[in-house]
Image (cartoon, rainbow, N blue to C red; front, side):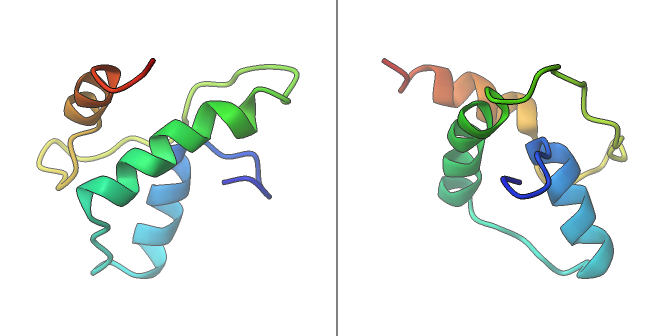
Amino acid sequence: MKTKQSHLKDAFDYIKQRRSEVSPNFSFMGQLLQFEPKILSSTPTHQAPSSQFPPNFFFNFDSLYSCLCCFRA
């Protein structure tokens, strides 16, 4: 994510395409989600993630966002 200045969804999609059995745990995904704005804040323009996930996709990013909002200071 840092090297390519990628959003979490794009980075995850990239990895998932190359290794379909990857399944990071909730805690690790939460850490990556918190890391995302730190690494993207230095980018001049904020681009929306380009990848689209299928409706039955394993990881629910919306749930993760809402859950992690409770822990942010």
